[in-house]
Length: 430
Image (cartoon, rainbow, N blue to C red; front, top):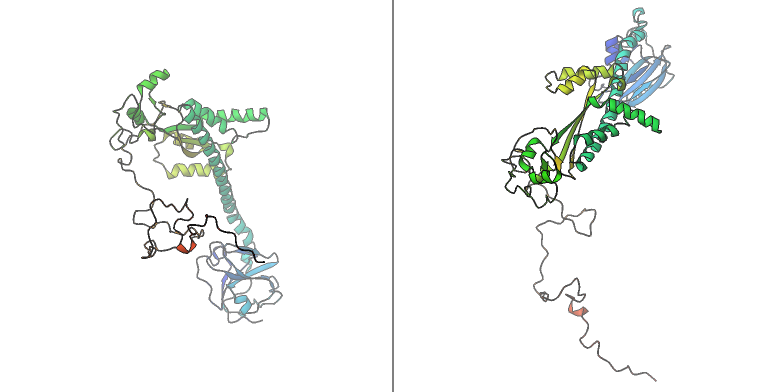
């Protein structure tokens, strides 16, 4: 069969085969790309479908794939060359399996003789060059999967630490114990007592590489809302923020003139805000839980991307080849918060002006749908009002349609006034 009308471009070198049709416009009718040697193609990063024709060493069509969409791959074990055409071209040219194509020099414009002797072994060279890169990308993807698993476990452990802190006055020791216990599963878990004990020991050994920070309440929160009377009653020398009756209080009961305005006080918080426990936990994933090559690469890349990081804990984790992972959580306190290692984060909050996170006042509103239309497919205009009947008499003041079935009934539906009175029995016909 002659396909002389085709304008064929040949890709027989490494870079040309690697690129293929990437970054090019869709092939016009009568144009094609011949990749040789080639037995498999992919359409990753392409924006249009193509027809793929696999040709064996005898110059016969071994397989025809029509309209291969982007982000797909196809192959033919017996193929030696691959012809890529625009979608629909294979059917237009009636290219079918078994058909012989003349690949000799000069048979088609732009098509040279089969690959030269210097191209033999090119597939092996390409694999040696590309294979390690593809393997490294696969390892990085696996490392990202392990990072997602570690972040999920850290989120759970952070939640457990915060829950322990809310019921135990935000004591760091209670939160640390709950955090280490929750990390037991990440370090192996187990189904027996011995297995759980071993995993717990590994979690405790990792404790120096996990930092728990109390971001709220801050030191400034205790400056604004400390209750000396509550601290005395609890027998504490540390400062305490009350947790009871805060729905009715803006200041501790023994300090009614506290600085409670978030726009001017030291913490930028109200008493309700000061009763929110916010934690930030940073943990460094150890080397033995990293993928070879990919894990150290990510740790090194993190250090290079942020060389000016002033957090000495994070930089020390990176220096040891660990990958830092950070989790946050916020919970309402269920007990009085006691000051112990709280961070200092002064500021006026939102300048004492809370903003509505919803739509602006002039923005779209919810549709007004009738109760008979649960799917909300018909929306009556909000300004439309029902027409009033000028002849309709207003209901009496003591008439309630919800409790009086006869209220508002038309005259034709009203019963006669003497319907309860006795009436003579109807005469019987003889």
